[in-house]
Length: 115
Length: 107
Image (tube, rainbow over the protein chains, first blue to last red):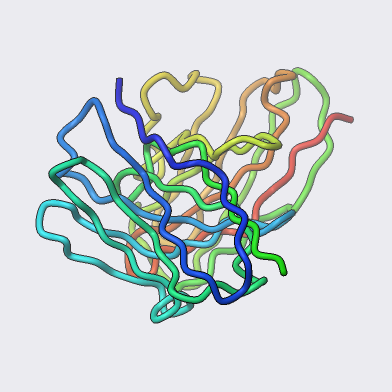
């Protein structure tokens, strides 16, 4: 079964750093793009960026470029989304999904940033 | 960025109704269009890709059509489990963009 398993909920303070993960299983992790999507409370879906674990080719939405870093460790079939300095406005649910057309989704990681 | 406009933003329908949701792209995207269903507190679920290809395991009551700038998602006979929010997404060009969503509620 193809699965994406995301890391658990995080509660952080403004200015802190964070790295959340998305582990793929049941398929060839290096052969499919993994994308990240933000959903702020009560709002719609926002595409953040995408990585091809096979060669680490990474694309960002202009809205998120410079705000987050997407990476992958193909040796452990895991993609990452990280922040160097969180803001309260980063409070949201973050999903990873496979392929450009997002056929398989993780269950999401809730990130809460509050002082 | 390509803008994706869904209509309506919400609708009320009864069990058994045929429901159609429209998605319009601000420029042509060929058939690089996906549809998702999201229930409260859950991750989105892929329904359709390439505008009209049904994702594995998705019931045939869901269908998609369109090409270029205008697309539709149709639910042939609405069932209680179909009440949810539906999103379209273009993946023709970077950055991929989502529509604002259509909330399907019980009448």
